[in-house]
Amino acid sequence: MTDAVVLLPVYQPDERLVELVAELRTAAPHTAVVVVDDGSGPNSARLLRRVGDLGCAVRRMDRHRGKGSALKEGCRYVLRAHPGKDVVCADADGQHRAADILRLAERVRDTRAIVLGVRRFDGDVPLRSRIGNAVTRTLFKVTTGVTASDTQTGLRAYPHELVRWLLTIPGERFDYEMAVLVAAARHRCPIEQVTVPTRYLDGNASSHFGVLVDSVRTYRPLLVPAETPGPDAPCAGR
Image 1 (cartoon, rainbow, N blue to C red):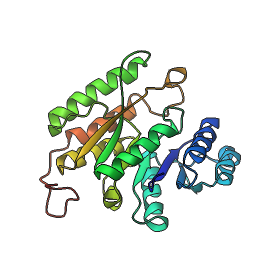
Image 2 (cartoon, rainbow, N blue to C red; image 1 turned 120 degrees about the vertical axis):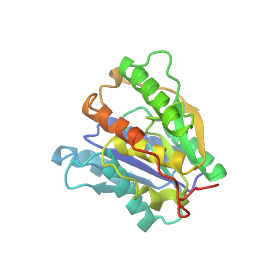
Image 3 (cartoon, helix red, strand yellow; image 1 turned 180 degrees about the horizontal axis):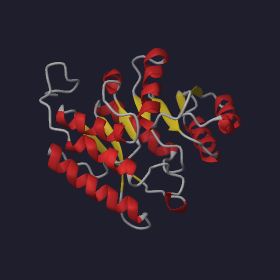
Image 4 (tube, rainbow, N blue to C red; image 1 turned 30 degrees about the vertical axis):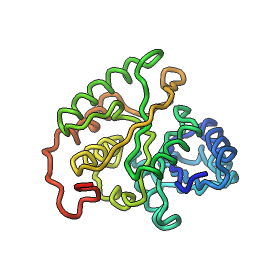
């Protein structure tokens, strides 16, 4: 049982979204699930109706704006519909299991920290994922002084105290998640890590991450000069 809201940003989703929602419904029937569709278009309407029929709140963007925009739309909805609830963000492309999502929900409830679901980068991991994470992990450590074993994970839990703050972080696409992590580290927010199974299907072929353009966007927050957190920083000094 958890009081967290599960937030699933999706773009051109497939049956794996329905499978994940059904899995969540079985494991935690009273947990609120919010699906934000990032402008997938009419072809996704039938599938989104199906998850709506399973009890999800479905929010649809008017056009494709990027993962960061979808996450922010989900946070705005949570603030209106579920004030005071923690939020667990997850990908619905088969990488994340309901059991791991619920583990993070319990951890954020107990620690009041940002919780990352971190993968082990060994075994059958696509080369671009292995190299990309190694580079960003190193840059993140150099830039912030904080060690995070998986800076690119989409499985993250945020205490409700930070949900409104998440809306202030710049970034509309894949750069947004890195910008959040960098800002959290610079504001001295506590960051916890929970190891989760690494699952890639068809070499992560379903990912919408553009290797060149989105990699540049992802690295950009790491290159912005550090700012000293002021008195209103959400976690400063905690």
